[in-house]
Image 1 (cartoon, rainbow, N blue to C red):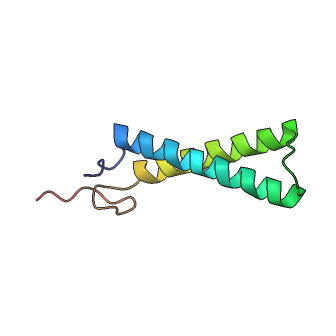
Image 2 (image 1 turned 90 degrees about the vertical axis):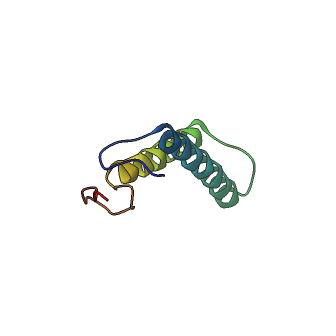
Length: 79
């Protein structure tokens, strides 16, 4: 079951962390492909971290803004 509109539960936080980790891995792979090597600079790590945090926060904001029926911004329907 998903969390209600304007709330987050523990599973939302866990899934947000998974999204952040996957985003960091994919950003690292893209950086390696573009750089043609395994060398990272401090700027690369900063970019990877910023991208991962942004993706995790975006996922949490999406879940915060949707109800348990996955409808964006709509109030819960009492059944």
